[in-house]
Each structure stands twice: as C-alpha cells, then as structure tokens.
Image (tube, rainbow, N blue to C red; front, side, top):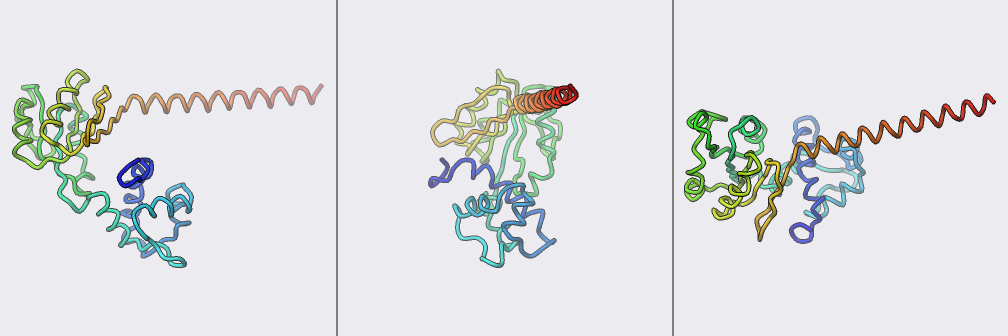
Length: 227
C-alpha cells in the first residue's frame, strides 16, 4: 500500500491520468468519467474510485473540469515543485534520458550527469557538462537533488545506489540490469527494459499458440462435418 493506505497500483496509474488531462488542455473544458474511460481504455467506475483516494473531483452531471484536474493532479505528483535529478552513466541510455524534452515540460530538471569514462568527461549532454563519478557524493551534498537515475552496468549500480542513499536523495530510478532493493524510506523503481521485452515476447507467442490451436480446431470441425 502507498501513502495513507493508497494502493500502489493506483499510484502507478496517476501519471496516466495526468498525461491524459495534459493532452486534453485547450481542447475541451470538461470531460465525463465515461468519456475519460474511453480515452484511457478502462472503466468509469475505476476512474472514479482511483481519484476518490485524493479528494472529491468532478460533479455529477458535469464531469471533470480539465484545467482544474490537470492542475490538481500535477500538485499531487509534485510537478509544481522543483524536481532536480542526476544521471550516473553517460552511455546511450543516459544520453537519451538527459535529452528527453518531456522531463523538463513536467517540472524535472537535470542537475548533473556523471561517468567514469575519460572520453566523455567534459562533454555537454542535455545542456549539462559530464562530470567524473568520483565527485558524485560531493555534488549531492551541495545540490538539492531529489531523484537519482542509474544507467550504469550492473556491477556499478549497487555502489551508486549506496552513494544516493548516504546523500539522502529522495528516490532512485534504476535502469541497470540488477535489482536495487528499497531500504527505509527510500523508494526505488527498477525498470528492466529486457524484462519488458521478454514479457511482450511471451504474450506474442502465447497469442500465436492460441490462434494456432483455434485454427486447428476449426479445421478439425470442418473435416468432421465433411465426413
């Protein structure tokens, strides 16, 4: 369960609501729960239940005010606060994250990027100069960093996580191919792209196997009918 007993799955869905209302701004003034459900491929009752955890949103017969709920969801997610993050690992993934424009649009600012490769130290990535990882702890002690992003190889990730913990970083977003366990009050999100790809592969093969069985059943029925 999340803060104040809010289920984690609801917290995971909040950014989707925010993204949807963000896309609707300027296009319409209000939207009903049924219309929103169609936009998000879910049910109106699920939307009402999810949002009820955070207060009374929407009016019966009117729906949700798009601008108002966009603002309130942004406040709930902390978009209205300064959200500085650092990246450790200036490889292809780290560079892609540093140059991702949407982060800045929703209130996240890149404060620093670190690596141990001398060939990238000093380069400008995402408008920030790459620094040597040896200076990470000192940098964190001097800057209000809330989020640490790890895009290093697996063998370096745990050491980086320890530096983040010791410095009091608010949370960790880990892309390294190793699980980092949350400790105490430090939230950690592990995102393993290979795992997601393999899960998708399983779903594709499972669907293809089901379709193959269905075709065989149809053929068998047709043959039986002919006989």
